[in-house]
Amino acid sequence: MGFGGELRGPARRALANLSSGHARAELARVPAALLHSGVWRSARPTHLLPVERAVRRWGSSVATLGAVAAIRFGDDIAVYDDRGALTYRELDRRCAAQAAGLHADLGMGPGSSVAVLCRNHRGFLEATLAASRLGADVLFLNTEFAAPQLAAVLEAHAPGLVVLDDEFTAVLDATGCDVPSVLAWHETTAAHLDLERLAESTAPAPPTPATPGRLVILTSGTTGTPKAAPRAPSALALSGLTVTALSRFGLRSGEPMLLCPPLFHGLGLLHSMLALFLGCPLVLSRRFDPADALRLVEKRRAGAMLAVPVMLRRTLDGAPDPADTSSLRTVISGASSLDPALATRFMDRFGDILCDTYGSSEIGIASIATAADLRSAPGTVGRPCLGSTVRILDRDDRPVGPDTVGRVFAGGGLVFGGYAGGGTREVVDGLMSTGDLGHLDADGRLYIDGREDDMIVCGGENVYPQEVEVVLGSHPAVAEVAVVGVDDPEFGERLVAYVVLSEHAEADAEAMQDHVRQNLARYKVPREIHLVGSLPRNATGKVLRNQLG
Image 1 (cartoon, one colour):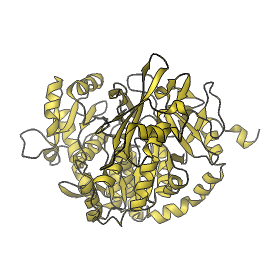
Image 2 (image 1 turned 90 degrees about the vertical axis):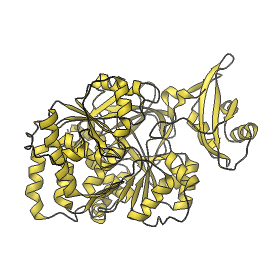
Image 3 (image 1 turned 60 degrees about the horizontal axis):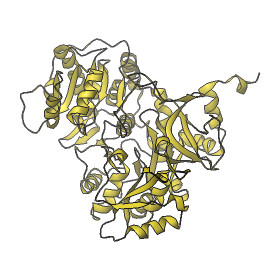
Image 4 (image 1 turned 135 degrees about the vertical axis):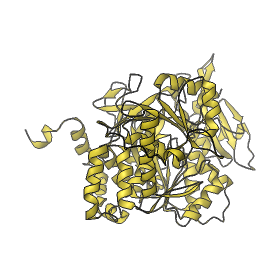
């Protein structure tokens, strides 16, 4: 049997992915992308032994990322936030002391769980890196949780400690959960134990953990209670994404990266790790404001900016023009659907620097669309990352051809191993269901047509809300739109659209229905269109459809 016939599972799929012309071309560009990024700019022979010690001590974990960054980038800036700047060396020293204090004073260590309830600032990173040094699991909590949601998560996962900003202490108290807490951020001097005091701990270094702790990310929970998707970080798993990001985003080592989405979400967390690896100073702000974001780009000369689509829209609609954004070479979108009309508007104003990512808490990032993809194939979420596989399957788990809608399955090193409470997503031939419906075009670019459970059956016809949303979104008066199905005694379900008009725009429901009728089949025209001031969204910008209708 030949070599190709001996390959199994992931290896065979990875080799098959490289058979496409686009994949081979991208692989050929990897050396140049690595060189151009400057990723090895700070590597020195004297770093080899300290890096080896760090890897041997903490294994494949974010603790290793932080320690190696301190070795490689030393006195370079690691974080800019609302309190100023920290170097990589200062961040590493503080995290080492905090880990020692958490172990000595609060008994945290291997087998423990540390919950983090913080906005975007140095304390989030410190809590994550310090807990990782101890081999503890890190549970990332949504800052939008009300007391009942927070109580449900804390009771399900029973962390031994919550690291939080002082603005969330009232919510924590309202849960009635008896769990110790440490403040990560407060506006005034507090009597409460905080990370600042732990950063001055003189406790002895804790023992080396036998195994790395896990990072536990909660799903968005747009249709129910959030589930926990734990994963043990792997340098090998991140390598394909890192190489793809360098190639398609054009990231450069040492260039500041502005992260606007919450760090507790997988998109923000993953890019914070990428920044540590590249030595890119993280530019963080506790609250997003479009004008402030652009001023931070100008002030820090940021080369990259991460923002979810609703942030891009707010930046276009509400931010002033005078900010100098000439340093920006890439703007990375993700976490929710990027409307093609919004992508075009953004690139028309800021240049062809926009990229889009597709993934989830369960599969990580599966594909990336470049600005060229978004221009030439509006609506695409791009091609799979190196080392990732995307397949479109029918209801009988058979692959479908180009331009045929089916169920999206993905595989790669970032796919999780199952929910913390048990269970997982459907797996076929080693690939995991994303829960989305989509199709591939003849060039291998992926398009998402909607969620499997969002499909609306209207008069016996299948309608995917996202298709209708894209058409309505192309109307010049429409800023945002969401389409849902509601029960109908005659048709089973009927389409209802909720539309937010652009500033100063005027349009009526009939004109928008005519716009859909001119572009789609008649059964895809919403029976009702409601004009609303805003759409309900979660912290990462996803529309909460269960609050519509």
